[in-house]
Image (tube, rainbow, N blue to C red):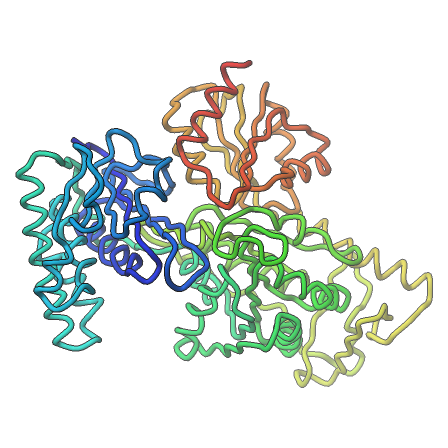
Length: 567
């Protein structure tokens, strides 16, 4: 019997419709009154290989990946071997008779999915039958399941929709027979209020935040996992008056974005590691001519092409260091609400300080779905910092706070000059050594204001802690759940959603702890190194994972227990 929480994993080859099953089930689960969290792992190929999706169904809020598999839906013959390290003697395996014909285990349930599907109209319906069976096992009302099918397939025509509805009927019959066998019983408390909540993934929320931030231009060259954000914004570009340009390469994309912001349109650039490497010269251009730009950097394992569809936190140093010395801001959201607010804020803060602002995400966070109550829009507003110029306008006027008034071409009587070289106050090239010193200091002065606008880390757990866990970005969910599982009053979690510059409160939190431990999805503990550089605080224990997969709740929990026992 599965109570409170059940982990369902669907595994099959690319092209077998795993994403379709996920889309149907997560909607049905949410509308059925359960909390849901879905994450996926997939190969960089259109067909073949093995992909899997984990769908957690719970009576409490969840936003994390677990290693545990309670129910496995094996769609392909290679599913069991692919997931063998996660399958336990308690895992219930459900699959087609043909797929599992050579597998014998008391926890295996063989169902003639393909035969039933062929009777309906073809093997394509097997996935919907499986989704219907799981929905029945989860006690989701058939009407809700049918509504989800209709929402997804109505656009494909009446014939296909009727076939899918019939497949859903057959799936519910299969689920009923499984329940009668007493091999599976799920008892999770429903909450009818959940059906009205938002069900979003990390990409969608970042996209919504960018739109709320006033994004009017997006230039990109497709690259996983940033491509999903490009598709999302392109989908709504006409509705929100956004120009989307798929450029010929990343160099063109960054220069287009700089040009758009220079002309007064808020611009977004979306890319991934090696794509951003091509943009570095363009970013340097934005930095020296103080043109705002917002860059979404979807991290994946590198270098070069690396693992295109896997996850990592390897690009913090890539975003942090560049040619020359000027300020920047790096956000790294780890929960959906933060992804919205930080993405929206990125445009205001880039505009205010005339600097690059990075939104660091990764494949795991980009693809994770879960339900949240709402997004509060009361404090969301667009803060414009463009002025109307006069004939005496100086684009790079030396000021006490380092911020010069930003004009745009054609708005006023002034001339807005920009140059990739060092320049004087009006923007004209100079090699005057004293003026060079003043301009460097001018740009760096912005750091004082940026630090005042910085977002502090969030302390989660008990304030009277001895042991402090540190995490940033997408590790939020797994660390938070592991902390809840430990339920110890001497342990807390310091979650960073802004990783540069560090908020002034950082040192205070670190100094209070007797022992510190950090979790990062990279091999060199890049954030721990940054903390040491900025605060001179050395973290006691670094737990690093860099195989392209996210941490699981179980891994975090085990590492924390070992760490506490040693001390």
